[in-house]
Image (cartoon, rainbow, N blue to C red; front, side):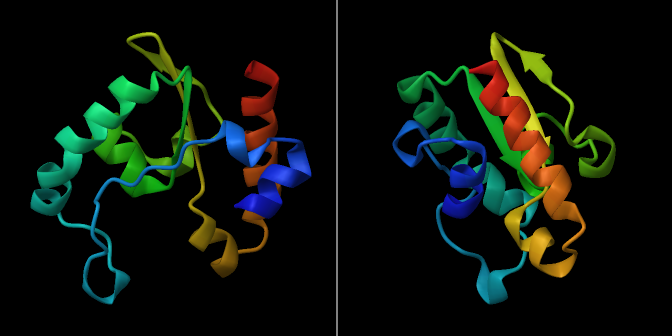
Length: 118
């Protein structure tokens, strides 16, 4: 992530990173709904304290747990979604970039959109 931030001119000290779940699920699998639900109040409180103007949702798990199960990462990435005064930018999870290097261009372009909005 730090290299991507540097590539587009985002300072790491201007970024707050949080996760849907606070403990890594076994075998690094995606969290199940009950695991995410158990941590969402903690995450909501982090958002209240940090008061972000923009939240970048990295991957499908973040997108679906924050904005709703009806969203898909492929159709949503790169598009601003505004809810309750916060702008959300869904994009690929960094792990997806390792599996498919062609997604790196989309990812960098999405981060540029974020930088342009700040």
